Length: 403
Image 1: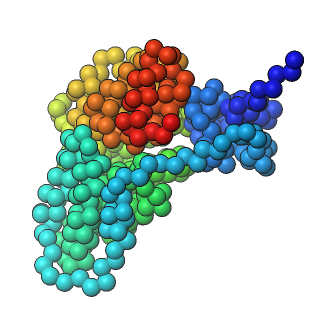
Image 2 (image 1 turned 120 degrees about the horizontal axis):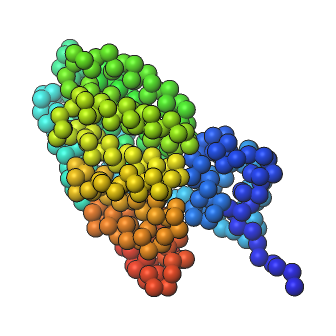
Image 3 (image 1 turned 90 degrees about the vertical axis):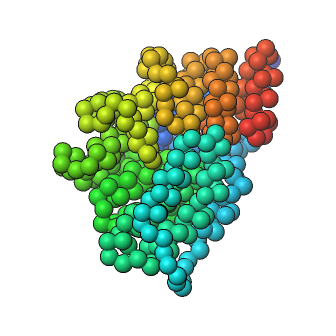
């Protein structure tokens, strides 16, 4: 009897890759994806989205996406859930102040407001909901101040406006229109350049690199990060401590970017960041906006290992890292998601579900809006062993995952 089972999209990708003579690493580099993503797609641990198929097709000799999905496969459009406050944030981002009058807030006030907003982002369990409430007013106040102030006060206000755009990017990264994310990056970079502040410019590049990496432009992200490093590095010895913090942040971003494109050189950048943090920052130092600190360096090590497809190394790196020491509720939730990804790589559904439940208990919105968490929950709800499937279905339902 003939086997009528249709090949999966993942098996089709693998067959076409082998026929084209590409390794996973080679195909990942050509398509702007990570080798781990290719592996997950081929083994069925990650759905083949329309966007990924479009990136892969030219390098697999495919002109009709039906050759990847097959005649009976429903296409995943990689739709991200919208947060309820996205419309309000969109209006604040696209409200052009043609006429501005009155007294602007002082740069000192704006710095306090921006710092408070970032503190809320890192301490709230519902950080996206609270940021969505704060952002419209924060964007309005910083936009007005940048228009009304002159001279040094205007430049300081512009630096705070850039930070408001960066927070908007962090809020929008997992939901909302991709065009809105690009808008925050462009506006943040413009404000930072107009502020003529090296730290503000480097921070804007750091945020831009995250989006470039997310859309498969990892090499471009690395080029921009190198430019930022060259701007900051000469100022570390004699400048305020924030310059050393920024340098460490840039190297951590470079490490993760390299890991996402399968480059083992990630560990060199990670090691440089660790050296800067241990040498130039106090032992208990915690950066206000990105939470640069000794525990965060260890968090990045786990992330790099997972993205390099090495769950054993991820476990080893995570062994001595107490999640309670991570100085951010949002980052702690994301750390549990990364550990879940490592367990998923090893084919351990019970551990994957346990870690996703820990992430949900830490920061429910991290699980609700994280594409990686949602993808794992979708597969667990469908394919987990019967003994834990009901737990997976329950967690997926609470996270708003459509089953």
